[in-house]
Length: 157
Picture (spheres, rainbow, N blue to C red):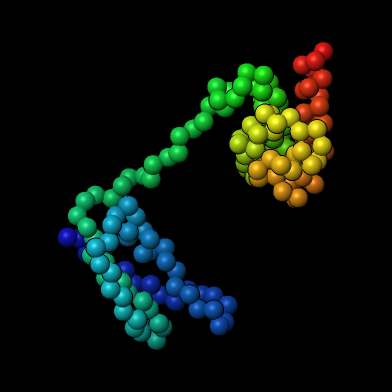
């Protein structure tokens, strides 16, 4: 059985909010199963410290946690929804670039797919999409509804 000994020192925090940084302990446990953990609070050079003695189950640490399966939305969506989904995805990517944020901070693929399927015509309809709350509705609602309407008029033309 492997043993890991990890000592955590008090992290620099605002007065009255002392904390121990758990990162070294998490690193020691990464991908392993602890059979037993003992802890000891003690003093190191006048500063409080917390030492963990961790008995690890035999076996190698997992190299990486399993990744979620990637969804191919073009194959999952009904055929008539794919053009709107593609337009929404392009809009989302442009929006994220202009805001300087990750594209999934604007809207997730799941939210885009739901919009493509539901084809909302009003803010009330758009607010029924899971993940679109008041903030996203106010920030992106008008643009999204205009894009849905534009794609609908292209299909009917």
